[in-house]
Amino acid sequence: MELQDVYTIHVSNLSRNKISDKKILEKYQKIKSAYSSASRFYHTLQHLSDVICELQKVETIIENLSQVMMAVFYHDIVYNVNSSDSEAESAEFASAELEDLNIPVADIENCKRMILATKDHTQLDNNDLNLFLDADLTILGSDRETYQTYLQNIRKEYSIYTDQEFNAGRKKVLSNLLKRQKLYKTSYFQEKYESKARENLSWEIQSL
Image (cartoon, helix red, strand yellow):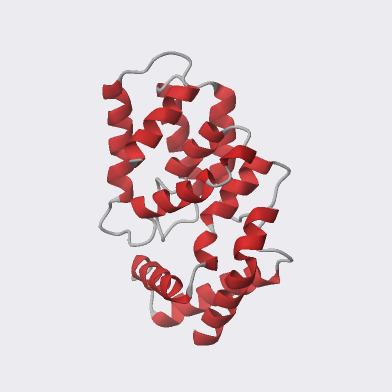
């Protein structure tokens, strides 16, 4: 299913009244434009597709799939490597767009909460949120070739930094992740990706 179709379905599920196809398309085009920016190499439409694919595998244990899908579409709508506020800006962007689509306040607030949680990926007492966060990090548990391509694309996104600056920051992030008792918060993603993700992170640290 195309991303636009996924977006349309879940907006329609959440909206309190019928929204025209034209309006939904206008909203989706903003998403498409943002994730297709020339400055993006990993945080692209492909990343959205990958996260959605992972979540569809566990949709039977997601309480509100449409809320989660809105968080997916908007979680990286603002992506600025010079700023520490991208998550907050993405959440506010999502809030304005979803309000204009006549989506209930409770759904908007939960969507914002999920987006804000991507800043530090801390486990919270919410299964839907934890599944969303885990799906967002499945790239860490990919095969080595895919992981290396991911690293190359992340490096391109941070091309304004020198290798020394990038490597130092990257090593700090990875070391903090490895200190966690579990990288993934839910049993499904732990069983599927935990071991390989730790192997990849350790390998990357050694290569920096």
